[in-house]
Image (tube, rainbow, N blue to C red):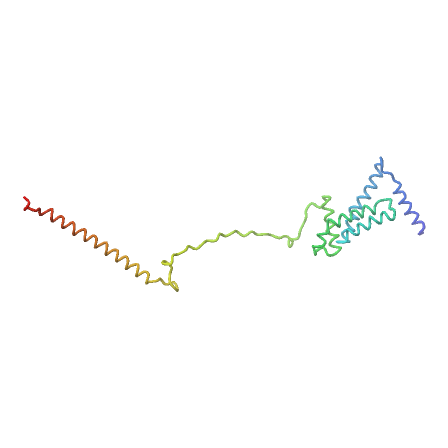
Length: 204
């Protein structure tokens, strides 16, 4: 039974390798589908499982394909896809603690696959992951007017009465001086009017 299975699997592999794609649409579609699956599903899946070690796993698959003489090219294609996937995700896998397990990385790779082929139209996020940024209005700082020292209130909100009394005294002095000037002017006017009313008759 084991010999039959070996010969059967070997014959299938040989048949696959013997298929010529040049000028043959059927063989081109078959081998193209195998290459697409090996690069997209197998390569990204191995890269998600390996995590930050995916570039090294990809290089290992490429070397293994050449060493074992893989005529199908599946190992080399999967290795190249794993290498590219690991390089693209290296920074994210190293800095994102949410992708610390292989299961989470595979889940994210599945979402990326569906989004890349437009099979997942909306990128749904949990409400907890959505951050709402509220911009606060900028308030202008109002500068308090500078009050001269003569107008500032005294201690405990009481006015300085000494300055007020000195101000009143100055006003009184100015008023008295003004009154004196007016009285002097009035006296001079009265004297001049007396001279005008009583002319000097001795000169006649």
